[in-house]
Image (tube, rainbow, N blue to C red):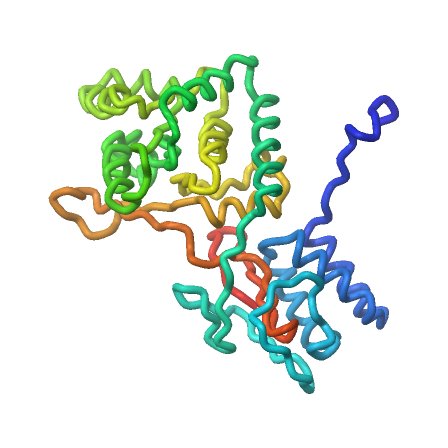
Length: 335
């Protein structure tokens, strides 16, 4: 570190664990005045809390939090009405919101929280920089950029390996190109506003293997003909390619993948911006829905929810909603 300039050293943001631990310590010491800045930081820097930290925050509200409306988050989005003085906080755990984001206990509707233009630009630059660093040579990512410039814009990007290997962990299962074909068709059915067919990103090794089969040649051949297939080069991690292509599409871009994006590669991105980007731009899918003549595999897309799973404050600070994500399933419930 002594050989690095101060500008090259970027401070690490505090984790959810560190912030909630500090909040518990402040409560134990009777330092109620320290709660406000800590909660502001949790609100602004953390999107999803792990179960243990969600439970700790719920316990803090029950036992130590100042009464509303004194506990108004700085800069928080509000629904307009001022909170009335109460005798304490009513805390509900493991709450499930309605499909449109309404809390069943308080009737509060969660907001869709987007990255600002400046935040999105910074996030895009960070993805670009990290993708460049992860490339084996400078030409790798340059080829993708050139492809996007020639054949784009692509408002829908598909993580094709994730799709082709979905539900294939059975005897005889394997890389299923028919699932790619069906998902591309379902994108046209469920995302009709896209100005261009989806971009399918697949590793070169997968493409070469698939092209040895009649089915692979048929499916991938159609994609190649329409300039909708990009093969990531050998030695490259295709995760960075589909993430880069989706982010490059801008605010309208959608990424189709069931990848939870929890591995060490994605941990290089700032959690707040990454989680909020993913909440507004990731489309998930399934192949267990209703089958029809045009949808023989029962493909179904799940577009981003109409609200964002991040900590939100309403009613002038009198109502707080905190999303908690289960570690294994990724299922979200609310405090």
